[in-house]
Amino acid sequence: MEGGPSSSDKTVPIETPAAEVSPKEKTPGTILTKTSRLKLEEITSILSDGETKYQVIHSAPFRPQPGEIFLFSSAGNPENNEKWRSDQYHWYQNGTKSMPDKDPVIKKIYFAYVAPSGRTCTFHKHVYRMLKSNRHLVLLHYLGDPSVIDETGRTRLRTKRGRGKTEEPPPENKKPVVTEPKKFHELLEECRTFDNVVNELFCVSLKDFVALQVAAQERKDFVKKIVIYPCCSLICGKNVMLEEVERLLQFTSSQPQLLMYDTAFTVGDFKIAALLFKHTLFQGGPALPAFFLIHNSDSMQPHEEFAQVVSEALLASFGKGNLPIVFSNQEHCRLLKGFVNTQQLQPWTDTMQRAKAWLEGNGYSTQEVSIYLAHIRGLFSQRTEADYKNMLEKCKLEWKQTFTVFFAENIQPFISKCFGRWIYEEHRVYNPYCGVSLVYCEPFCNLMKGMASLGKVPLDCIIDALDCLQVYFLHQIQEGLNKNGNYHLLPEFEGMVVPTQSIAQPVLSPENIVNRVQSNMQQQFAVNSQHQSTSSSTNEAIATYSWITQ
Image (cartoon, rainbow, N blue to C red):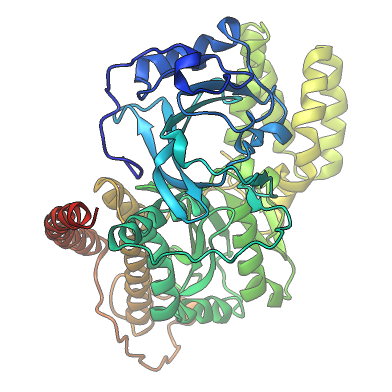
């Protein structure tokens, strides 16, 4: 449980008539009454089948009484999603819980009533929503002592974020309310709830939230930008590596430059992407990471932020035409247009696979599939755009109308932009098998695989590992320029004299970086275990304190 009351949700239900809940008449819209907590099977049943069994409400109940249960529906209108909140009471959100603990299907939200004299825990509102299906339904259950309910007519107003705010009617000769200082255990409960608030607002734990702030302060040469809303993302890359790329782009090398945006990795709760470049002074053009993106979103927003930062820091100053760039995720290539001064290229393989899947799914025979794929490859391989257009007209005479439409909508618009052989040859990256090869950085891939095997890696450990990885690559570059190590200069650059630069940080191989992360995680686990033991003793003291002060 993440917050809220700690008593068990397995209390045996006591079904009571509406008239016994309160001396008042039951509130319109009440579907059931119950003075004890709902069990998981009851909650699931109502949220799954309640629309066919009960009369749902489409606005908040008006000042409901303890024991009453309501089933709210937004009717599929997003503007109505939060209308259940405006029940004319002033509430304090007191935590959340996923039910059951293993493979949860229900989210439970606790609310405590706030009287004029302060928050009270004797009148509650429990809110239940399904996590996957029937998201438009909300189950409301009011519990507790009706005698504490304020009768002054407090009004709940909806805000932009749907949280609601309290507005009181103009007082007439109303005396100021003197609020008693909060007790120690109430302040502690608010601190515990703060972690839930951060998690709900920014989709990261409080610990990861703090890790972002620490990284911004302690790694100013590494962290470029932090975004915490509406999703969490961190863009980083050492200034020394950025300077190396800038110098490299000023050289004319016999090896072509090729950038790659690699978004294929996930470590713990976070996705990790990197902008790779080829170091064209060395034989084979080894791939190195210039920038990293750490984020926890499925949307394009973190990638757009990343493209903007990279463009401003590096690409905007490049004045020798467009740099070729490939993407590990072809959908990103289609949607992401923020990298300035670049020519987006795509390997043929992904498009060929999608075309094959479409052909097979639309009933084309095996022989027909082979013929159509051979036509596509032949179109991609034409030396000039004029040759491509001539061949396309001939192919259309043999194609079925359905495939002609598919090709015109899904492939043709991109050939002259990122598929044509003449484009690859212009940038000296043409590969007759797939158009253009993806850039592969083996040490980076090994690090990501090693960290992924550790499970839920904390954010601060991820940041530290990527920082160490760039130090490792900077050391490899320095060794290569000094004619040592694994990188060897091309013959045309062997006469270069490069001054030696010292690296202040320790140099660790990717394997040792993984070991360092594992060691840090074990130390953090030991500290957390000790903290939990201390917290357990503190909780006992708090419980004793609460009992004495009552």
